[in-house]
Image 1: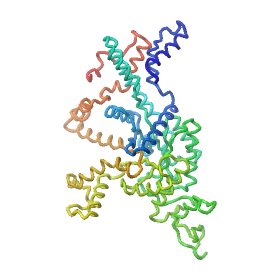
Image 2: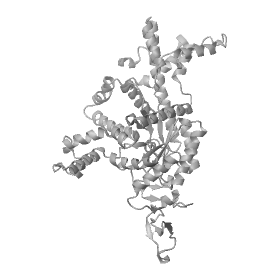
Image 3: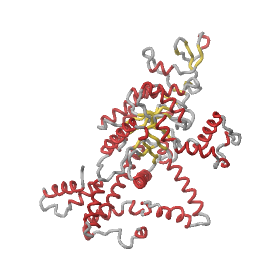
Image 4: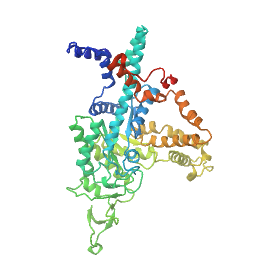
Length: 532
């Protein structure tokens, strides 16, 4: 283990080699700075976090109770506060990641302003956000360690050896805030070469896990909207290969690829692949194409095409824009084929985009996938696009009705109404929501649960409440009651926002560099002292 004493000794040895020229340099200060900057590059982070994720995947294979979770982020501070809060409440970051949502980047980070989730935002903003998230997480490390260094110094000054050793033990066993980020590369932002180049940038920024979807890149839609168009398997596998090559080139050999299928809600394809031999992926893909059986050339018009589907010749059903329609009610079958194919050709995890959070629906597909790939595991979007309250109340209603229970006091299509909030049905639905992640991990093969857009919604809600109070009759009391006093009572580190932004770290460095001459901000007149 790389300890405080080891770091100090290493620094002391390096200084000693320079004779008296470096006599002003304190080896203990160097040790502290090195410990505060454990990760020198994004590749250091990618390699470290890939190992964490692989170990977590193996742990889940042994026991589904070991599922993992994350929340989506659109800014480094948001990600930092999530991990600080997790360490504060649970003492460990084990099993908790961050998610980087393409939707959030489009809506919150594009120079064009808010955009829909259609890959119209600058693709460079994706690796830039990964780098920003890790910059803030590393700063969280530096800040917490700086507090531990001060704790150790205070104990030394007081001559309390036991307290000094206790502080040093905390330093030696410090757990970093740096955790895996599952990063959304959308549909690859172009062809397979474009996907490879962007994946490299994401890995260089620190991404150990890249999620890619099987939609057409230039026609990409949000997974929970209509108009989705999928690509043939060969096209998607080429992009999975591109991401794997990027991981391997950058030396992150255990990098994780999440293959997302949007086929459940996608009724269109842009391209009919060419079959090379009977039963190949192209033939399997084309078997789902809808069309009219051709029995006479008189059925064909200028520009029409015909393909052989089994023993039948069909004219594919095409829209005015040339897109080809799939047969209705084939979504689940296409999902299963997508998932098996992706896992058998280099992907590590699956993502099935669904239209509702329903364990039975997910499990029915996963069980079929596991017939071919027994250890298939999912990343699942616990999406704010779902009306969780309505969905689960309707699921409970349907279950009760099937059991013969009297549901006459409820109107199924009105179950979102506030009048049902304190009913028995509502209580059972809420319990199902509370247990959803644990139950889905056990019954539907979900290794990782995430919420894509949590802080988009929490920021809107908290801002709405603050604006209503502050600009209303409560005035400043609206801020004090609902923000600052709660920060103090709940022990939020950011109530001392100067410390959170690095002011005390800067003071320490000034002391290292300038000694007694250092001009520090943390003196008696610093108003942050009011929050001691």
